[in-house]
Amino acid sequence: MIAPLKPSDPRPGGVPFYIPNRCDDCGGTLVLDPNNEGWLDEFICPRCNNGVYLDMPKKVTDRIRGRRRQT
Ligand SMILES: [Zn+2]
Image (cartoon, rainbow, N blue to C red):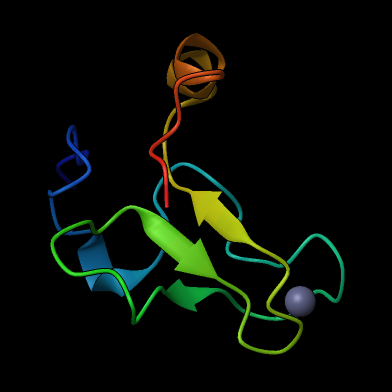
């Protein structure tokens, strides 16, 4: 399996590669954010819609904290 290296790289099977495919709050299965075109690393919980889960290695998440994309 080839690891997706960029936000625009497709995730194998359309599921998160680096993070658990599970909502922190309700345990539901995450799905790709349907409102997001081009970025394939943003997942949401359709059940409780509690925000965006970024599918990236933790060291990357730590590095970009504080300069997240504005919505
Ligand atoms: Zn949830």
